[in-house]
Length: 369
Image (cartoon, rainbow, N blue to C red; front, side, top):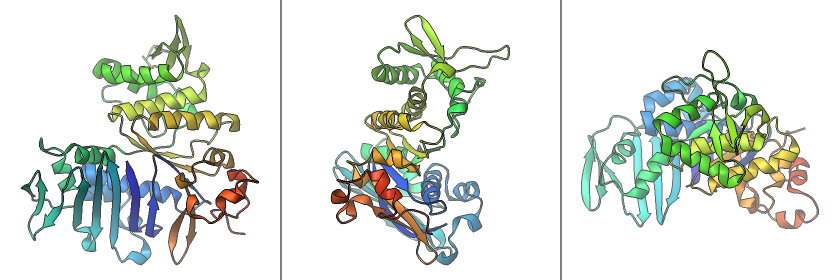
């Protein structure tokens, strides 16, 4: 699990640092930088998975990435905890030429750089890497047979990050199961992806079905019935001998199915960023959505949510360490405050709900007048 994210020089994140929990929520006004936090994580994930050049290209080029005041000095670092091992990882610095990896606890590991190579001591032996851009060291280490498991898990956790903006309409939509089809951030292709897993990765498909059945015991299976002559599929659930297609499946179960698919396809350790999961959801169903997210998180995945919903915030009343209130100024850029760090917040919550307290403006993170 990633426990801290620090970013310098990325869009509005001029000098930004924030703690993260298993399920964290970002709240703040429009244009305060919530989406930029998710973009910074996506940028880091792409660096680890495909390299710096690809990350810059996917983000729209250097002009779109660097904050104007940073003089193109960009740095992203994370701290993470896997088992009893704390991992520190940093990329960036002048010319974006630095990549540092260290760990403490169960696994002791550190990087040493020379003008031509980076050395990592694994199990007491130095392993040399000649990489031309950040991301190459971690990407190479996790492929080695002697890579310590916590480091491998950390690398996979970063590389498999998913930023999703699931739409219930897209999750319910029909899709064609062509080779290599993938679940899109909007939720499109859910049926086709599940259908592909049935043939290519049946064990993953079974784990998804088991998770859904554990939540709703009456569900005995997941199906993807064909709905037209072109071969398009839709998602369905099986209760006994009866099939219920997506339009008859609740929003909560449908979202849980999508989240379980993302999580299980990553080996149960996905890092999922969800943009406003409450959007388009009736307020009475938000608690159900959070329950599904917490169930998937309990299997090893991690979630970072953004919201404008006081109703969703109410569900975090007992978890103030998970609530991150964002504001932005021209001078400092995006800043974050952890709810649990505010004085007297527990006393204030005795009289009003968390959503009402935030909406009132007392906590910050609301539009300026």
